[in-house]
Length: 180
Image (cartoon, rainbow, N blue to C red; front, side, top):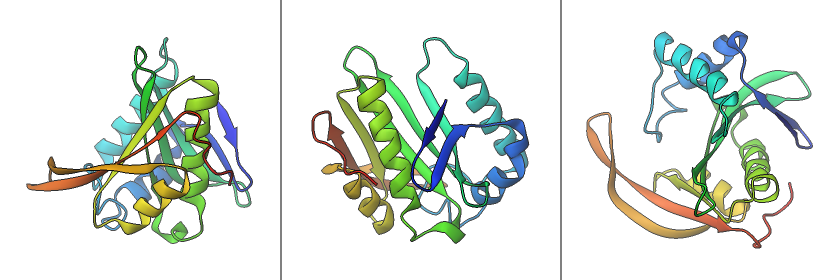
């Protein structure tokens, strides 16, 4: 699967993506608000193996895609959409972007493409995402792609030895996400 945006190519992961993935996934600033990482070499290898395997699953429920900057053909992050319930036509999305590429609208562009994939091609009715309340950049991205904050999940995740809250965002089909 490939998705194209004005500046990005979203494509399936490959084994050869390891150096670029490990670079951003092991960066303490990139993973500061995530519930994973920083990745060890084994973590990155396992992530790639799972993403590649999940791309072949039938029925497919996980779309983990590499974010490629089309101008330099550089892998700069990852974006994902998981179908969490076929019966209820619901999914969840998330993303991670190399620190050098923050603040350029690229996460918004990638996340918007995944929301469109979920609604337009997969027939989902609702797509959710969460972010740490302190991650103001991610909250802005989610709002820009048409998601509304639905709740504050207290002590939702045990992350690196401490309980972390999450804001819950969601978009519902028929609420057109902005085009980027």
